[in-house]
Image 1: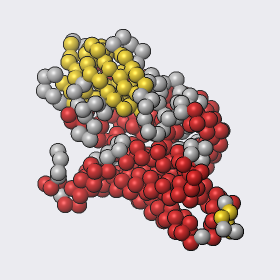
Image 2 (image 1 turned 120 degrees about the vertical axis):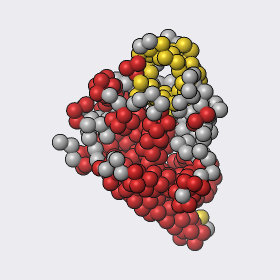
Image 3 (image 1 turned 180 degrees about the horizontal axis):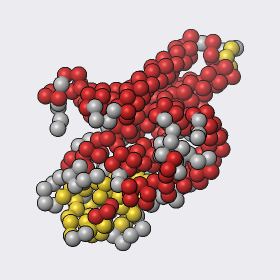
Amino acid sequence: MDTSEDILKDVENFCVKLRPIADVCYLEHKFNDQIIPIAKKFDILGLPVPKEFGGREADIFTYIKSFERIGIEGTGISTVLSVHSSLVQKTLMKFGTDKQKERYLEPSVKGDIIFAFGLTEPNAGSNPQELQMNFKKEQNSYILNGTKYLISNGTIADTILVFAKSTIDDKTSAFMINTNQDGFEKEELASKMGTPTTDTGMFELTDFKISTDNLVGEEGQGWQIAKHALIEGRLGVAAGCVGSIKDCLIESIEYSKERMQYGKAIAKHQLIQEHIAGIEVHLSSAEAMVNRAVTIKDKWDKNPEDKELMKKADLAIAEAKLFSANAAFDAADKAVQIFGGRGWSFWYRPGRHLVDTRVCKIYEGTEEILKLKIAAGVLGNQYQAYY
């Protein structure tokens, strides 16, 4: 059985192998099509998946440490893998039927199937319950129509976990769809601020027909499934942000010791030390919040019916994601300032982290929504600002 050390060693080797390729892809502003093949080579496409489906069966602590390490390489890389594993593989493990697990999990571990998560729409972002993609049932099939937008892995995915509303009662359900069918049209969204090495796309379903076997969970259970998926996803984002902060600190320390100004290394200048101290405090704080969230989440995983533990885990993860995303962006900003004019260039890593971590304050729960969620968790649900 794989030990934590085995898994983390494979993650490290993946990161080392990928970095020179990722550097070139970033400068060329193109999707890094080697992320999946190299992840496949080092067998890290199924970290949380049970052994029976070919996965590594990593415990939650090892899994999150893996994403902290991957986050050092950049938000774009961690996004590709987190969507695949945190949002979809873990959702299938919890809500999928035995047949769905056999059909999708093992191929996804091998890299034969890449997943995307289809929740966000042009007019349904922070309030996914306003989504307009719909479905209707016809005998043993479902017919889906609608558009999804800003979907990570959206144009490279073979299979997408999609959420749609019933045309009868407006209740949301979740479905697994294969992208090689008629009625599926996709478009890459390349004009984005950062994460150029990540595939981001939109897709439209037109009279898209699937079997009732593709329903995940029960009809009308979609919103519950989405909430569970987002809890997993937010924890992955927070871990990736810890990695970004760590890389900003590594780069800042190295550069400040080498860069000479006014006859001495800038590391000896007090205001540079202020920036470095700020990044270090961000790192220690984000690590502590993520570790706390992981510990509570582990307890909930072992007692999945405990609703109080679920609330505690949900709140702790929201807090960790909110803090880590803001800390990562600020750490990158401080690192860019340390690098000065060189920081204003994608030849150097802090500038990449600056534009890439900005999206972490938006996706899988904007900071505004998370603040409201955290406040409601403290005040009580009767004080929810949104429903």
